[in-house]
Image 1 (tube, helix red, strand yellow):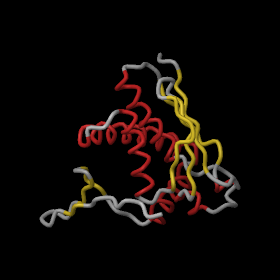
Image 2 (cartoon, rainbow, N blue to C red):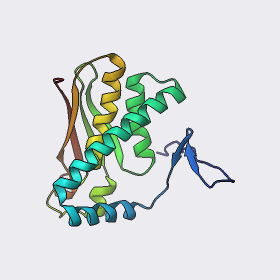
Image 3 (cartoon, rainbow, N blue to C red):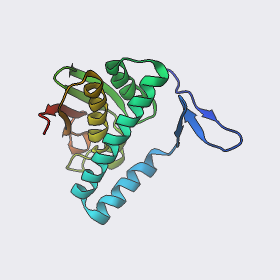
Length: 177
């Protein structure tokens, strides 16, 4: 089944690529995987995971705010759009398998995660931590728009690089404060 194409506009004067008005960078998958491996080797897996979580959480929140304005989407449709765009950009096939927007909970699965494929099935640990903060940031947008307090937290609970059939993430909302 063919997926809709992601619109890319290239400014001939500046060379800047944009999708839906947002500046983008197009990279080969191995670059991101090799970058992650290099940083993990330099500072450790947990330190990298912590840094990545915060930056991808903020980036997803900013992206969702912008996309909601650009497309006039509801908060929940914006969250779904966020996952759709990640799928369309080659990060894997993302699917929401459970969702309760009021409670701020979700289960998201990824088949063919770019990171799990890059590391391989014998890695022996989860490697798709880039998605954790990203999913939390998307849910943060949903809760923010609904005026709901709470802190979305996401963890990868199964990874194809750790021998599972697919990667699975659980998102929950912790009490504010």
